[in-house]
Amino acid sequence: MNKIATQLITEGPVCYEQYTITDPEAGTQLTITPERGGMITGFTLNGEEFIWRRYPNFSDSNRPRFGVPVLFPNCGMPDGGVHTFGGKPYPMEVHGLADLSAWAVESVGPDGVCLTLSASPLTKFLYPFDFTLLLTYNLQGTTATINLVVINEGEEPMPFSFGYHPYFCVSALENVKFDIHCATCSSNPKGVQPTAPATITLAKEPGADSSLRLLTGVDFPLAFTDSGNGHKVTVDADGSFTNGVLWQQNAEQFVCMEPWNGWANSLNEDGKHELLAPGEAMESSWSIQIEKA
Image (cartoon, rainbow, N blue to C red; front, side, top):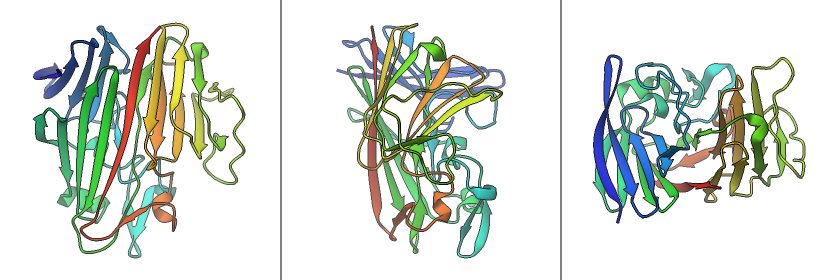
């Protein structure tokens, strides 16, 4: 039976409460930090970390570039850094506002740890809709499950997209082999997307500081194996997710393998985003499985 415990993490001037879900039989432990974007900040197998962390992780108030950030109400950057709702422009940074917000703990129990985030005067400056998000984390064996419920609490239809940005530890990019099947694959979200090759690779472009692959028509699961550290990671997702992203920066020891529901600028494009009627809710689910060779 899983065990759930709390601990405090202190880094510089900040102190956050973390929740850990442990499966003693499988030797796994999942760590969630509600106040730091409501995100997973650790996932270990027999004490070995599979989630990449960048220091400082918690004392830096900027957008988190580690762990598993939650993307809402948009994935990527809208054109010009602006969403237009009702003819009025609203500024928005890359990936939205959820990963910059402190989430509250809704419940802790056999179903896992459930967090909540609701609209506030600050969020409505960026995104003028009344919403509630319920985010539930659980652990079964070597698989972490993540369930999101989006509720429209307002009186008008609510547009949104969502996704996740998991950072996984790797020994080196050249040691990583992907097992991915999708319709298209490119490094540019604009224009016609080229048909995906039979084998998806992620290589650093000459003169670039990062490596990027944008995937549409994804046939989940996505997986990679690392011949250097023996890690195998599998990301599975329900039908809410159709897109994916692979990303790596500055030759650091991580690879992001990301399930997305939307795309950059999709909230500004008709038919490219979710649209919830007042009082309606949408539920989605995905998972991370970790293995060691």
